[in-house]
Image (cartoon, rainbow, N blue to C red; front, side, top):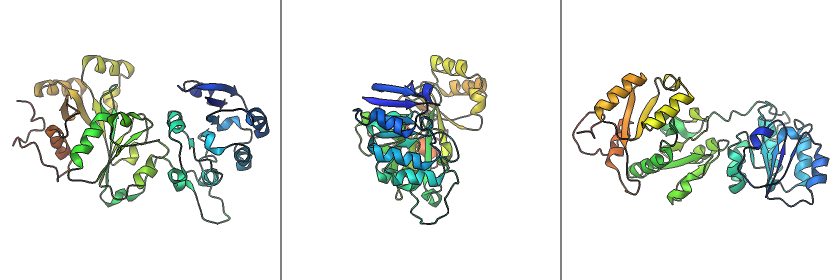
Length: 333
């Protein structure tokens, strides 16, 4: 059972689907928290950092780390420049507080998959300079090994359950015949149901580290889910399942959905559309479809149509389906 200590983010934390034994809300001195929870058994303490009085002063967090088992603390950070500065995050790591995030959706993941030092070492500044680093850490920037030919491709569902997770899994299987491939999913654990231990789950906070931690990879496929880390990717594929209900739900939730997708790489997935249907779809939605993927059998080791998709993406070492046709949607007879 878990404890929630909230303040600014009370409403968001209330939506967490986790077992809770106790929840308190407000601003508290560290001494007050120590008095309440020192002899109170709990699995994890999900701690809204704004619930700690004077949290901007790292010494107050240090007092917290001295009195609690830091492996049981998950800090939900706010968006202030101080808290997200390199100096502040580095000192959290120095105290042994490894589980911190700005993403409410990552909390449940961290409960079951707590970080080790290796996961947060990128934030640990071992420079002994006396000058503090108060520059905010940009979690949305990756300047790692990707410049040397590494392709990082993100996949994002536009309509609900458009199949990004399974598609990433199947693409990895097709690609790894000719490339060194890594597949990541962000803030979810759906990969575990595919029974492939090479698939990796991570959090939005740690995505850049997991990308950088694969120096041998030629291709990294990322199931982005709700992550906003588009710019960690060289390119993003936007998946639409073109069923009537899914499309109507999309438009009712956002009338400008296709306007926002203008000039994006749109792929129809789990599609039964014909070439003529696709032309009509493009006309009605005022969009351009990059590729059309039909329903596929995810139990197959290899799907030739995905080779054609990968070739369209520019993977030259992949052999095509051998159809001899040059049309993009050559699966249609």
